[in-house]
Image 1 (cartoon, chains in turn cyan, brown):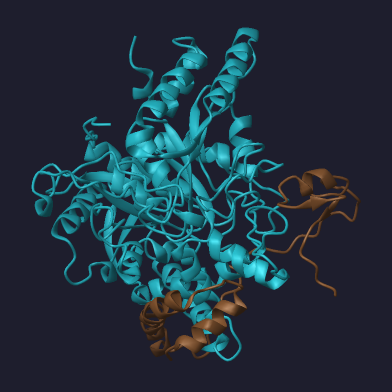
Image 2: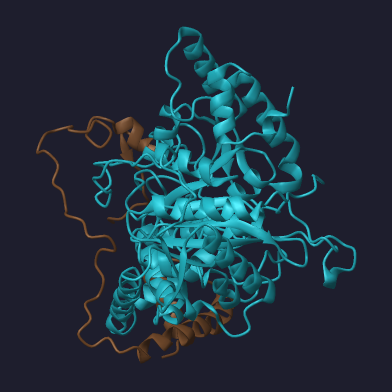
Length: 501
Length: 100
């Protein structure tokens, strides 16, 4: 029998439905991969093999009774540990929420269980989703399954462990290493697309409001959006369909029907215009990244699209705008961690309530989280609010208008996902600004709430994956997925990390 | 604008995060680096531009004015609310004494 962990979402769903194999067999195969890779990759914070088996058993029983199995019946998935899951530790990779067991289920995870998925475990991430390398997790770094083909120029033949990207680094590593066929991610400023690009997988963030934020631990509420990470475009379309949908419990949830993204997939780009933003062609752009962008342009042309030059004039201000707005919202959202209602409490001898708050938050938050809370507190403080926060929200309006203007002359935008391939763990940790620059191409679409995805385009000279990013109009996930499919079919990306774990 | 040790100490106090002298010293240049970088936004001409309030236009909904319209966010779940509290006592959240 074929190795079931080689299969993606569609193949598992169809195989279980058709009786080629059982859901239990699938769950057992992935459970084994999860367990075998944990020491080397650290992709999961908590593994839940029993939950995966239990869900699979229910699917097999349904099939025996001839009942419908759901959009993802029999597909076991990884759940980013930012989604609240009943009775299973939900930590946001932080010490302050270590041991927190929600009494409720997030809307997105519930929708996935209702669609027939089972949970393999809770995936590691950057603490409170703040980071681009998964190095801010309280539960240790995730190590990418990928390694440079030459062992790393500066490391001789010693394999430098590489970052899986972040914040959804556990998700990207796990999908890439075949520990799960698909995983949830969340994107605040690139946290689905950048890790997907770093690990040679596909990831999509939908339009802001498509997926309910209810039960997702909040980072920056005006930006946070859940999405799908899987091996290909079709699998992402299937999963996103299962995750999306109106939720009255989220005031920013879009009250729109979920389109049939999978059924309407089409790689035919005839009559479509693809915009190439000239501002993304920055000075000193990595040669391989520029090359893969040119490949993407050629592929979309081949698919029938017309390529046009567009301008997004405020692109260079997106990252500084993000680093005011996201910390500002984070400082407000994270005020809830006070050592009173849930999570860690640090009560020094003789401490009063205020001392307890300060001690708890000092002990419970990591360095990057503290840094962002302080920046956010500062830019929102009296006397600085207008200069920083209001100014940033005005620039955000301009960035959003840039896109609106561009979409008057094109249907989708094509750009690189990241300015470089994966870097080594430790390479950027001492310089927050350098780390932030990783998201320079991803952040603008987040600020504008637009659907955007990353598809694997090829390998760089070091044998590491590069991703291409497609950004679409608000609500046009279909256009994004279709362009992604057109690239995927032409890129023929079949590379995968050699198994060393 | 740049921050000094006293300012960072004040921000940390506003944010209710205890920081040691040593941490303060380390944070000042880091925060100044980030603040100097975000200050480039000041050069953007924003005259006549409204600050963004909603990235995707949406209307604020009101739920039905019904008790327990959604049992999950309704009442009568005291034990669930307290289940993760570090110190739940007699059906309340326990905190250090706040009134002498």
